[in-house]
Image (cartoon, rainbow, N blue to C red; front, side):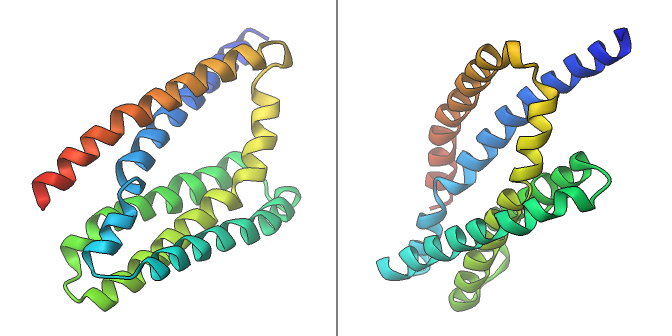
Length: 172
């Protein structure tokens, strides 16, 4: 049981850090996603449509994500490859796209599709993530653990916003 306890503690630490870094990276990029679209001259309607498409893809992906859990050998691998891998690679692609694509029409389509894919992958892994968290965090420590984790996640988002603003300002 000593190894299991050490493994669980290490898992909880990594889970905490994952929340911290994912919140920071999400807020660094996604807080200014609409500004990317506006810089390409899109209308308010297209920005709303982009958000709706991403939200629809996210909602629809929850069902196959839940159905995948009993069919996979490892929830951790599913989470790492979908939300952790494809979802976060989508953030990197979104942030690099304005530097790589010159044509505004192609850039807008790519941005909308990348955001939808990122949202879908993050939601696809959510049922497996929730299930794994229930096994990882002991019931007696959940309230305290998640309150501390949520404070850290919010703090990371607060720190990321002005940094992202300075980055956007320096490029404009």
